[in-house]
Image (cartoon, rainbow, N blue to C red):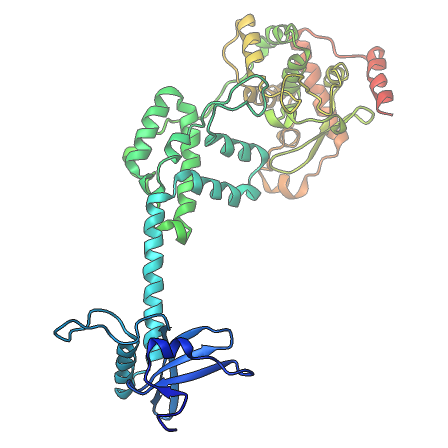
Length: 456
């Protein structure tokens, strides 16, 4: 084609701006008569860009150089040295590559890959300085929440809460900052061994047990971060591993608090005299059922079957388990007020149910002159006191919701509720006898039957 063709001319800014794509075509190509291989592509939408076209072997290749707004010619100083980029200079370089047998497209792909890697590295470096532990913690909790129970989700949310807000479960109380809040507020890259050590020293001095619990949470969080590529280059997943850190973690040990047989009378007397009947009923039911603290606190009226004398417990391990509703516990529950759907309700709690019976239990222990006993210690007491009536270990485990500890228990023992009830009532009667309390008799059944009538 002649160089005087409308598609071949010396590129100038005026002629490039005047170039248009003919009607009915998606694009038009124009070629520079001054620099071989340099072209201009104009699309039907008016977009303009410089291109390079050359022959590599028997193949015609075409590469985009850049937008048509870039300089057409390489600018030079007075001595003829290039001072900036230009479309003709890039076309000249690509022409040299083609003549040498190299494919400009491969070079462009390599350049793009390198630039992408550089951008990713720069992004990671920005993250190293910008992302805080709180942001990563929120992502961690969201990812792990399906694998946790309600209590674990609540504990992890409380661990990093800001504080200064109304308590989520106790009306009138202001929440305190979570134990991990100050540590996680640091940039993620600064969650190193020194930061963990400083945090542990401060927390252990004030609340050693709480520090041990939240150190385990922190350890799981750091391990999770180390397993994710987008965070592994930022966080130090082994910040919790040095001996200097591990030696600061308080040793929790095995707790052994438990009510003794001779303490039962004093304990029952003090608990029954508590001014709040819900607290009194809860603590007695905790001892006589061996249920976990939150399992019992989360009991709803729909879980209580007064007719067939059973309780459905939302077990944190097995999901649901059904245990006997023994006579004395039935008597306790039937006397409770029905404010809402919770058995152990509370008019002052945000969610309408009992939240923390430890304070009431502490007052009862002090009044009775008994040593400190945790709520979980009541569960431990049930399992221990059952040995006085020679209750089989498998029956105790099934009532308390422990996993089977032997092959026979795991695969061959499925005790019906009636068999559990026989042993459970025997244990309850013995405990009440040691406490000097009568077991509800048949003459006291009308109170329970009234509740059944209310249930319809």
